[in-house]
Length: 341
Ligand code: NAD
Image (cartoon, rainbow, N blue to C red):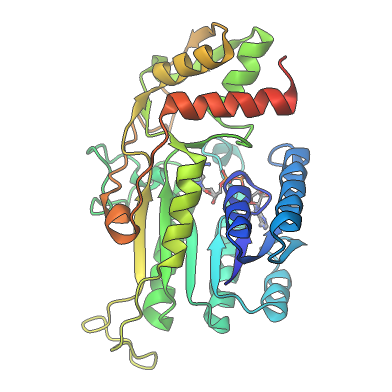
């Protein structure tokens, strides 16, 4: 199996690529190594992928390039014939999108369109791509089920991800490209993102600085451990939606053709209060946090809670890691990488 993993220097992309290499797949990784957060952390992840490749030697190739540049994407697909594509590169982050919308248009709309076009023209059997729990927006019915409407995302980031889902539908419907969108729910774990709460809280607690809990700490989040996510992404990618045998590219008929298009939640199905997440972190660090309680921020979701039954039914997805275990493993990694502060 030859798999393209975009965003391979990123948090989730690195873990997915590593797992694929370890099981013996051939992996091509691509990433712009942008400076949204510390590029050194991204380069360190890439060094570990080189190492995983040396141990398992199934074949790994990395391309440093921007997917918003069509010639980069076309060149990549001209040089390699992929069985599967796992598209995780994107401009992530909810708050950053309030001030920097153009970065989201470049990476989440222009780059994504280049990927759809390349997959359409290349005979890739399945495109799996990252969406987000944020698409549920103002919809507060719990748990979030894929059957609930997701047409009113609040943040611009979420709007671009919802657009990705709809763009995938068009390509699945018109061109028969099997696509699967995965709505991630607050992923955390070793090699995590420095802009995310767990990382920020850890750094502040170790420095004796206050941590900020918005909405007075009353948020709940369906925090999902990275190993559970990586396993779920690979299972989903391994199992494309079947192409409809009646599908006809010259006469796509909405009445008869069911597009090979799927959307799944990929969360933990077990929301935890933010204050309990902080307690797990305090226990793992052996230090108390200085907590600053702040009001709700514009665009923030109050709670997230993934109904994961659809992904479980489709590919046997069962997240197994508790917040206590996962936060402990994050802290072990953090203190190895950055020292005990
Ligand atoms: P990340 O920022 O660590 O990884 C994304 C990678 O994509 C980065 O290394 C970045 O350099 C690369 N990239 C961005 N734009 C690019 C471009 N135009 N060309 C090439 N490379 C580019 O983020 P992550 O946490 O690993 O997220 C992976 C995916 O999952 C993203 O699509 C993100 O929106 C989505 N997601 C993540 C979470 C989470 O909790 N981590 C939650 C919901 C959705």
